[in-house]
Image 1 (cartoon, rainbow, N blue to C red):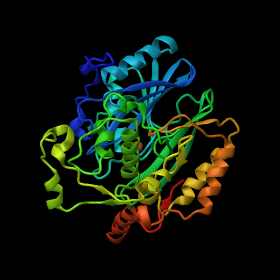
Image 2: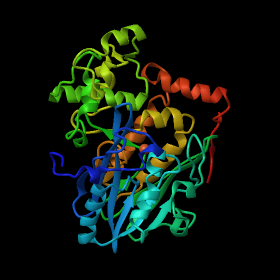
Image 3: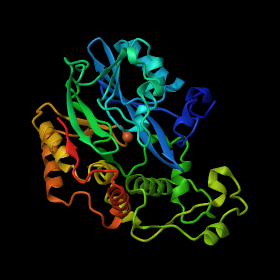
Length: 393
Ligand SMILES: [Fe+2]
């Protein structure tokens, strides 16, 4: 048993080899109430090479029971949290995968669907798996109780309004996200469309802050030291990685230098990656991170990867979606599938975001955006993505 009283087998997730992301076979779940009696959050960590960001499943109260939006692996811990909600609010009636891409949200759908055999499954139109396209049945999605959002109707129309971002033809597949305005709470549930990032590390890292401490160091031969300051520094760097993949203030040291600091006594453990830390942060990294994170409240934004790699030539689709949202007087909150939630998100806040987006340069290629811009340029040169994305209606 762990310090917080959870059995390790309740955090077991046997399907991890499908998408080999940290923390591999063991996933802790953090449960919290977002809006009293209406919305709850279940968060797990997901990432590569210790770059782990929280992924959220949102549970919404609907008439007659519960709706699960944005699937997560159904570990014992996650199922126990949902079971306790079912006792108070009724059974899980539906499971919704509102994104056409987003493999990290799609892979857990099959196992989650099997954990709730009575639930109706709803998926966004145009399901695809990048970089390879797999039929839904291969991902274990039960076709006999699966419906397609908008094409086959919508779930819980009494409580929810469904608003589509896209569809867009991306060449490699389709981008579409069907957001849900949950009227009883006034919250808009989204997947990757928008995020809000806080300077405080998420509670998920409380049990095991290793990924934060790993990145808090300047060199591989430094030990992992646990302080509040080190956790915040590690979190800021993790956010930079997750946002820009290769942020500008980051250097990759030469191999001889890397090996000189590695394998020192005290660092010969898997936890420190044997002293290998193949990154060096240049001055200015903190201000780059400050541009992404809010000190007082989480900073609302379009995630740079979405802006630069998914929608670089399709800002109009995002603006159109936001214009639609700003007409909803009952909008109060935003609950994304990553980072902080709930975020304040009324029509005034939407208008402010619209004004910011119209005024600044969309999908730049300079400074921190350079690496993302170069990936997009390569895809354009190879003809993988179209110069003019086709908006579909
Ligand atoms: Fe995502």
